[in-house]
Image (tube, rainbow, N blue to C red):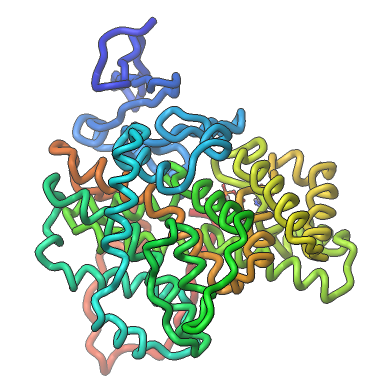
Length: 451
Ligand code: CMC
């Protein structure tokens, strides 16, 4: 039975959890979220019991209460502000979804137009930022440039870089949504030695990005509506995913009262890793490797089952059922290749791997299904987006989620700085040895899985 409401959308269960340590027993309240998720509130655990909870990788730890995104990984459900991802994919677009995530509800027609205008009005970078791009070696990964340039962009609007301020937040959010696109496209152009193409406000959000990526000074890129739709869908499907590694990073940085641009730049770095956003690039590399080797997929799956490889684009910390985004992306992938009259041997390999994996006990027992990254790379390849830009596209897509999560924590007067504890397992009290008495020893890597 449910008792009092604790904060909006959260109730406190009538029963509580009891923790017994030696002779003493501790009552721990149980909180219930609006979708029935239950959490044991251990806020006072250490103060009362002098014990902490240990949860490496945070698989069982709720770091916040949030109203933004709901995921039920067992049932394959994803909702932004309560709206199923399937409905948004069918009827909405990326900019509208950005509004929904950041401001909590779908915009009216007028609000939608205002948001589009705001984004268009701040799409240009400060002209001096062009020189910053010059400083990076041509071999730099675009995610490194993106993160640095987001921080640099913040320096050009210093008056707005105070900790969260409701009066300036909206314009800052629009600038970030708009400029991440410009930075991403400039990064690509620079890496290829191509002239920079400035944004053109006649294009909507995603079309404008494609324009900056692929147009030439003397010739605009031919804008295929199906291509714009497919890329917009990829952005929309990536727009938020509750407390994943990069979003948790943004919240962690924001909790120190760092500004929006700095918090989000940290999120870009977290996203870069191949177990997170970098997986879309890793999937294509894997498919290509299988293709070049002439493998029918079985050889690769054998290596995965032997623990030598990971099937990239498969598995998820939260989804133990189909990732609903993967289903939508797979459909869009087929549609796009059909419309463009293209075939891709890598798509055939991906489908074969999926078929093998979904009927193999290794994957079934571990509840490993294709995730959002399994097919998104094939769409991007069909559009002509180069491999090293895949994770950048993910970052553009995730921007609304990062901004919404930043706002949620930064505007919460009661939020505390995020500061996890640890269990120290290093040497006990040791004393300083003078340099002349120290022995030559090798540094051994002490990392192990047996924490
Ligand atoms: N291929 C083969 N085995 C796997 C895979 C995979 N892709 N994913 C998990 N496993 C196995 C893993 O070896 C372990 O087996 P065992 O119990 O025998 O040791 C078991 O499944 C549980 O795996 P885990 O590493 O404990 O799971 P996790 O929740 O820590 O990791 C994950 C989640 C997404 C990092 C992982 O599934 C993975 O590395 N997948 C491939 C990378 C990928 O596609 N990442 C994109 C995720 S979706 C986009 C995003 O939100 O970032």
